[in-house]
Length: 146
Image 1 (spheres, rainbow, N blue to C red):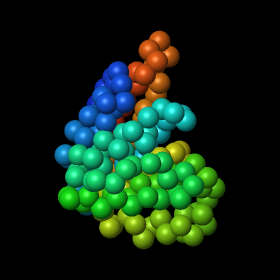
Image 2 (cartoon, one colour):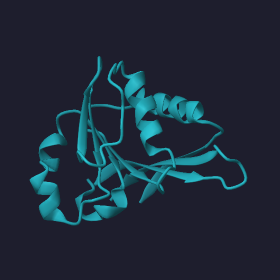
Image 3 (cartoon, rainbow, N blue to C red):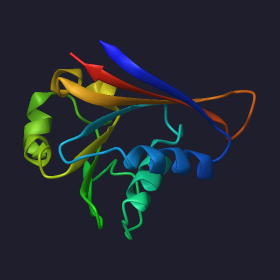
Image 4 (cartoon, one colour):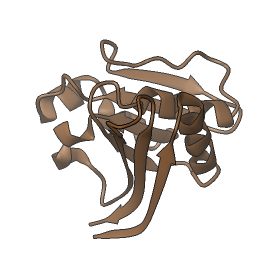
């Protein structure tokens, strides 16, 4: 069941980062953010804005090959997962996915690959390109409660 749907239009990478920074002010330990969007949609830029607003000094990059990057910020640990290469439960267990969930905030790119592992309550972030404008994105953020 979806509740509290918020929709934003981002005109630039900086807008995307700003929107994410606003969202980060609402987070608390144990929160889970499931991200959806095509390649190049701006998922990593969104995470960069989120981590930066929490006081993270590290350079945020896509965890495509590492599966997870952990950012220890001034306010909270952020576990940034990329599920693009995850094929099932065994892959999640082998990367220690479940061990990270309570250690801070978890943000997962390519969450459509792990519907079986999403928690009962999470925030869904869907980013889509707006074809008419080169750098514009539509960002839909909704709370999900199963």
